[in-house]
Amino acid sequence: MSKLYLVPTPVGNLGDMTFRSVEVLKTVAAILAEDTRTSGKLLKHFEIENSMIPFHAHNEHRMLERVIERLKSGDELALITDAGTPGVSDPGFLLVRACAENDIVVETLPGATAVIPALINSGLPADRFCFEGFLPPKKGRNKRMIALAEEERTMLFYESPHRIVKTLAQFAEFFGEDRQAALVREISKIHEETVRGSLGELVARYTDHPPKGEIVLVVQGKK
Image (cartoon, rainbow, N blue to C red; front, side):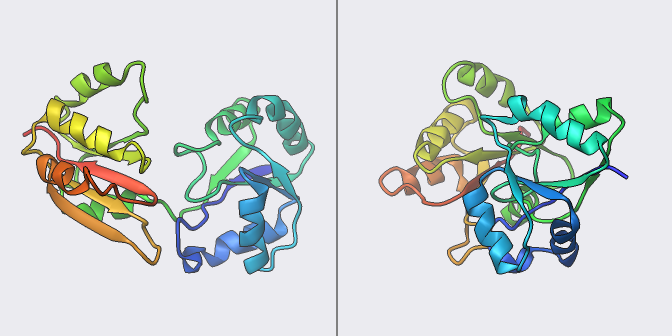
């Protein structure tokens, strides 16, 4: 029976890979990988000897029909990204939608993600939250900030190290310097760190010394 597996991969520590994920990657017909070089190291570590097919943001539209035809022929395939769960700010949405339109079974394995650990570790309310991913770098950015200033749920964002100070400063401007936040970086890695404080405090802390690594920014909602 044809099936697409969405397989999470570790965001840091390789020990976060589940036994089931390894088993699936060993038994499917082929693995769709966002970056075959990065995924190659993962497969080698877990002794997974399976073929990989590049599937990323630059070729997913072109590859979509070919992958669907292979699934319809009866193959089981797995999709992995560089880190975390496919489809969350990574390739996967278009393929899952196409599978749904073609009555192809999709099975998403539970596993590594940066969002939930960052939320829980922030100390901010976790009963209601929204995930915003990456903000628009330019066009539409201010409009999004204005809308989010009224958001009452805890908000989570992905951000790159070279933009984080600008983003913190804009949050302080639109949300207020006293709004509480937490900057969580390098989740599940050696230098994992959570820094909590007001947006004003975080701006002061990082203006001259921007943080490095993979960052999740958690911001308190409007009271």
